Length: 294
Ligand SMILES: Nc1ncnc2c1ncn2[C@@H]1O[C@H](COP(=O)(O)OP(=O)(O)OP(=O)(O)O)[C@@H](O)[C@H]1O
Image (cartoon, rainbow, N blue to C red; front, side):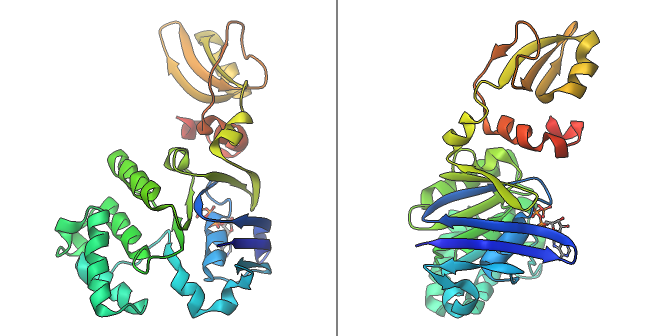
């Protein structure tokens, strides 16, 4: 299957949210990485056919997604950023309700609901009301509902928002296990959510993809630019203002720092293996507050 974005743009009044995106996705896991406001949600909503592009189009195997209508919706599973759960429903009622909207046969819907609640580890909570669920449980239920129709295109907008580290790890395992025959798009600003499960990472900034490649290809772009060094306490304020700081740990006489820089920031700095987090900092440090980095 081919999911193509062709010269895709979206403008809201005088704000260009998505700018001339051209890319083709086939089966695999794609991480759309970008800061808040980069345009991820707008792009995903155009792919899902929820909003119309200002120009350009989304095509599935050469056919416009909006013109495909029902046939496109049958292929699609979507977890929006803000999901409207009905708090008085139990998890099972909710799944059956979404299944009926998706037009699934009741018998199949029941079986699929059982399977999916098991997959997202909510099997024992099937009869509990959603109003008693934690944020993480609701998010897992959201992932389960997106899978009801066994979608060939699965789109997850910030799927791990509100999940604790254990649930994040669980989520990554679920995705890696089912990737084979689907196009899976995960949008996030959290690098670790997609670093190990994405076949391709697309870095989005100000409405455009500024980088696209396998995690290894992207890591090559910061190779030789990540340093581990000791900065004397008296010089720290100057270094913090001048360099992109990936990490810092203040000790008695110096700060143990990880710095992204073309040149060694200080004598004795040691070149270390980069991570995607370093790459993200390199490209987004101009948009971040100092406190965001740690
Ligand atoms: N309906 C709208 N009307 C006006 N501006 C909008 C609208 N929707 C989005 N925008 C603007 O378009 C830009 C991209 O927003 P979008 O929500 O797509 O980004 P994002 O990368 O998903 O960020 P976030 O993770 O914070 O949602 C932002 O500047 C946003 O304010």
